[in-house]
Image (cartoon, rainbow, N blue to C red; front, side, top):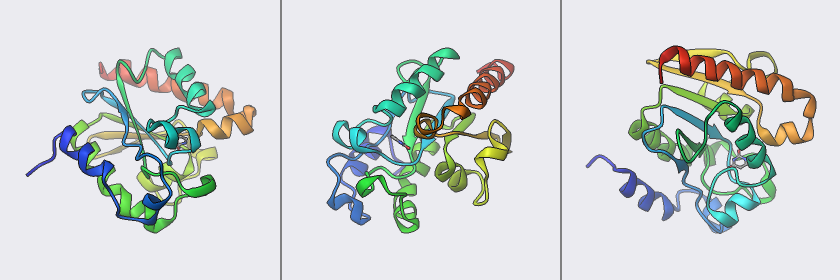
Length: 187
Ligand code: URA
C-alpha cells in the first residue's frame, strides 16, 4: 500500500531503524504545506527541534524564517521543511553514514508524496546527500541543478550563518535567486 502523509508520519514517529532512537525525545518528521512546490531539507534536529518535534525552531530556524519571509515563503503557507535524519544526533555531531542511510527512506517517501518542483538543501550534509557527494557549498551555493524534472539547489546552513555572518549576503542572493526561479516557473 502506498503511504499517505498520515500513515507515513505514524510509522516514522515509531521508527527504531538506528541507534538515534535511543537518545531522542521526539522524532522530527517535518512541517509545512503538503502541497508545497518548494521543499527545504536540513541535516538533522538540534536540541530545540528534538524537544519540540519540529524542524528549525532554534536560533538558526528563526534566521531561516527571516530569509523565507523576505521572499514571501513560510512554513505555514507555501513550503515544506524536513531533515536528512529525523532524530537528533547526540551533542549535535554530524549524522553518521549509516544513520543517514537508515533514515533517508522516510525522506524519499516524503519527496514522493510532495513531488516538489524545487528542493533547497540547507548546508553541506544535505547538499552532499541530495545533490552530489562532492558538493562544495562555498563554490556551488545558489546554482540550480536539474534532476528528473526537479531543480536542486544548495545554500548555507542557517547555523553556519550564525557562526559566520560574512556568508549572509551570499545566502540572501541565493534566496533571491530562488524567488526569481519560483516566479519564472509560475509556482
Ligand atoms: N539544523 C538542521 O539541519 N535541521 C534542523 O531541524 C535544525 C537545525
